[in-house]
Image (cartoon, rainbow, N blue to C red; front, side, top):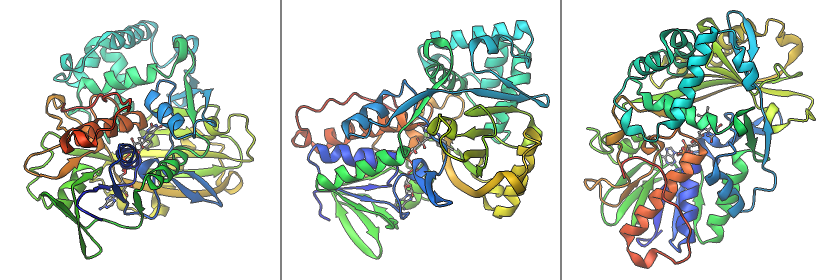
Length: 453
Ligand SMILES: Cc1cc2nc3c(=O)[nH]c(=O)nc-3n(C[C@H](O)[C@H](O)[C@H](O)COP(=O)(O)OP(=O)(O)OC[C@H]3O[C@@H](n4cnc5c(N)ncnc54)[C@H](O)[C@@H]3O)c2cc1C
């Protein structure tokens, strides 16, 4: 620990990418991670004797930053893309909308509604900049463009399931950005194609950690930072010890970052969201595949789930395993008491919803193992017109601190791709601030599409 090094707080994808990139530029880095493993939301966990994704993750063919980083650190050999199916549960039945021809027959919507939806998706591709739509409330915008019927039949249940019923504060930018990202998963406009690294994002995270160490950095897991004192040098308080750094990069979300810098008034990171989504997710290991789809969208509020994701459809497309991994996620506001509910209560609720869709699922015979996962701060929700105020890396009231959380990602959907872009952009800001001596020739980074810059 010395005042010419940088401390990176958080060992998720953002912190690891940033620490690796800093090290590549010859800057000494100490990374601190509170939990005993790296990867954060994108990491894996022990489950019934194997390592599995804590939450479901795929890589899209358009995720060039993820693919590029995987190639750069040499873990791309096992990156495999497969066509994936998408199901839609509505009116008590399941329908495939995996291909364009299936979508054209989609019975949730009337023919005129389907045509309007198609025109809306095409229109989203033509909108080149979020500035034009960010001040528009999502509900009114999509209702006008795609029709009230399309909104009420399709978007409303999906959005409510994703945003814990709170849809009135959403900007058109969210749906625009999401639609564009998912269209990128449909190669040639046909079936969705998704991929994963063997071992998931954890493989990338572990390799990044290796590279950080090789470059002279340190990785400190099970080391929660207690507080950070802004200044030059900035001081990290950890385990009763004060360690001085040239700069401290905080890759934690604003509620945590503010607590760490002792910012009770919330002066730092003005412009980042007030609302955050958490997630409660039940993982099932089942004896048989439950559906032919990677994801199932659900337009039935009684189910009480945001979707159903069978990751073995992507990580084991040939069905070589003797089981399937099925995730039952429910996004909720970070204040929702369900985040503190006992596992058994969550399991019972979620299985009841699951059996509404799969009535033949019998836990006695079909279920091998299960686990309940939670994350209180999973995703920021940017409000209407918030884009212009999304902050950048530095806040002059907090010298020596670089802020690098997913709340600064805008207008793109939070993903591994956007996260790596955020780390790259913060890297540029840090090296610019540290001065030209830090900038080593020959790096080929591209500035990211993030807000506040
Ligand atoms: C359910 C779900 C599904 C997703 N699916 C996909 C997908 O399919 N594809 C995709 O590309 N992306 C997906 N994402 C998004 C992806 O997981 C995130 O973009 C990415 O993991 C964010 O990484 P991060 O490092 O910014 O944050 P985090 O992963 O939250 O990392 C922050 C880290 O900081 C640590 N920390 C907190 N406080 C302290 C402290 N005081 N001291 C030290 N460390 C601390 C935490 O333990 C954590 O490890 C998904 C996310 C979720 C929640």
